[in-house]
Length: 384
Image (cartoon, rainbow, N blue to C red; front, side, top):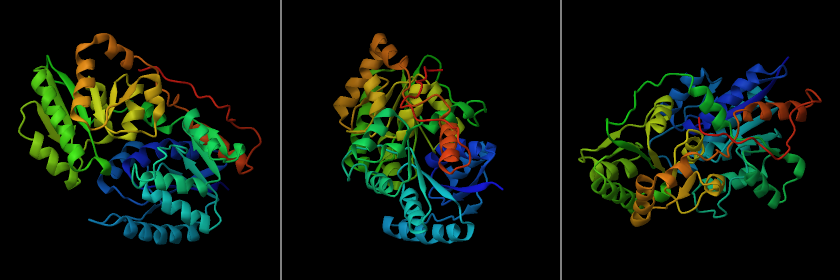
């Protein structure tokens, strides 16, 4: 009889990165997934589940309008606890840094269930930035038995925090596994730039960019459009009113700006592939774009994903209008600078992270003796 591993997620990015692990668990001789969806992002989550053929065993459907973080956390803890007590998994996997991750880790700790943290070790070393994600992942780390770090840099962060060497594993990032699988499927929405134009893809959703920072981002977009008549912008707008109201007010009437609802996962990949360059504050985009050979300019002042910055496939530009314009303009006008970013190797893995994670779980849970070991290296991927 296979042993149950609880796989917990609530948002679209979590589901994307957990989907390869669900698949690897289904293929395991010893383990099977117990899928718990908290549904922090209902509609966007369902799109991803359909792409990867995943049906939750327990759908908690906890999304409520205008809910506070404290209110969400309390409901998550109570609901996840009910499932865990009934299903009795032998371990729980959480991914990233959402409120679901924090709540799930606490529930597992209270029930003496070991936690595996996927995408462990990301740090800005500033508990207020990003908020509340940095706190979520730091606290989750204290509750974790197995730290599945996506890169050597994130593994080093954990070792610097004195986590035992035998609990830290460098696996690569499962987002690359998911990306390779997703590209086998056709997109629902055909995304192509207008003939003779170059498309810039823009996304933003982080709390720290609400208000004046977002206005500065929009001002940069408008200045770039004025400078370059061949430039057009695709901006999938996050439904949060703090984002949508500002973006529609400042960019909604420009003839070379296309505002749309958030794209489904496959269509967003198609949009990244069609784009000349990308402006985003998304962590997932920082990981995916380099594997597609697309320069990504990060709309943040610091990032917990320094690897792409270090190898030159991404650059931090923050939310200062002049700084954004300067860097984008360089990429639009300097072919050598563009090639240097576009042709670099992705530092986030080789597409086998999920298999490594399940191999480690099988060994750690005593299912078999031989499995993948953490040697501190994960192959890099050249743009496809």
